[in-house]
Amino acid sequence: MPVTTAPPAPLSDRSVPARRIAWASMVGTSLESFDFYLFAYFSAYFLGPLFFDPLGTFGGQLAAFATIAVAFVVRPIGAVLFGHMGDRLGRRTTLLWTVGIMGVATGLIGLLPTYAQAGWLGAVLIVLLRVVQGLSLGGEWGGSILLATEHSGRVKRAFYAAIPQLGSPVGSMLTAVVFIVMTLVLPAEELAAWGWRIPFLLAIPLLAVSLYLRWSIDETPVFKEVVAEGRRDRLPFLTMFRQRPAAIAIAIGAALLGIGSYSLMNTYTINYGVAQLGFSYQDLLIATTIGALVQFVTIPLFGVWATRIGSARVVAWGALGTLLITFPMYFLLQFATFPILVATMVVGGILPTMSWAALGGLMNDLFPDHYRYSALSISYAIAATVSGFVPLLTIAIGEATAYAWWHPGIVLGAMSLVTLVAAWAAARVPRVPESEADADRFAAAGRT
Image 1: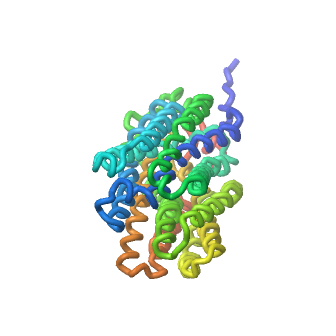
Image 2 (image 1 turned 135 degrees about the vertical axis):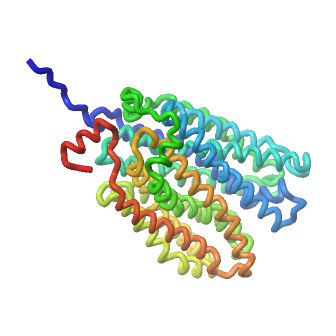
Image 3 (image 1 turned 30 degrees about the vertical axis):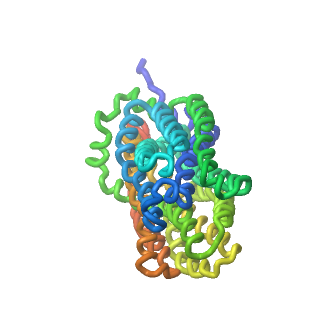
């Protein structure tokens, strides 16, 4: 009697509760985003005077934005390191390392001496800790996306890829809320003297929560299959460039708007709104928080839409919409009313968020599972490195143009155009099979 072998079970049948894992992944990403955005808010107002005081107002602000950029510059190095770990040791193990490193580095920032206390020592240490943060974040995003998507089936994968993207607005909102409370409770002189340390020290208990959540999650079925089938690459970093260089370029371009718009809106716009437009720091924090709250609804909705029309198309629509509203939005902002500020943060956030929400699904479809962690992490990190210079570039353009109302629109419009072209290209790249077993099933079904 011939021996028959049952076909491998679809991944969706083998998945543990994908929704619970996706939300747990989002919580972990939220806490890490909180750590990272905390520094962005801090640098927009406090970093220059506290750590770079001898450089003057403009020089201190440039130094503060350059310190933000440092973390983005080293992110590709972290992406190579943690991407290798994620493809060799597993998604879960790697994410435990990334969140642990981020939490410790953030907590230590709250203990640093200012320039008035120890001269340039504090500035040197804060740059070093920003390097550590950047290395950690280089491996965070790709792992969080894979933790959510590799526990789900193909049909709902685009939706689950959108859920970890909620981590960014959650982190932004938590950061804004903390600073709003601080500005209400403490006088400005006490906030500048010692109160700024409290949000950074909050990273320590939040780290414990995040570690617990990630420890409780099992390794993904996809990675277990890669190990069982002996398909791990010795050097996934080299394999991805050798096999899919065009896909990497597409992924970088697709990520640019989603990341860069946050750098522009949450860092540069806060400083620009206070220094040039006359808004209060508190008004800007409230407007940013309202914009983040709206994203709690729109990101899951965009994820659902991506399951229907495809992730690449949703990214493209978000980029096109942002391109169309960029200059009208910044023109209206010059009238400096609070309702217009809120509308700017909401409308100027929703459309780039469309591209952001579908980004994980777009990238997931571009790369095979045995080097997917490296590919997602490195592509995202390179885009983030470019985005890290957005505040620095925008303030340089502003200074050169006497802060003409349209100067931020040049940067936002350029990022929108790059992402639009990349999304158009991504829609024309065939989706890769999930694994060798899936490749056989796809071939048998006549699909590619």
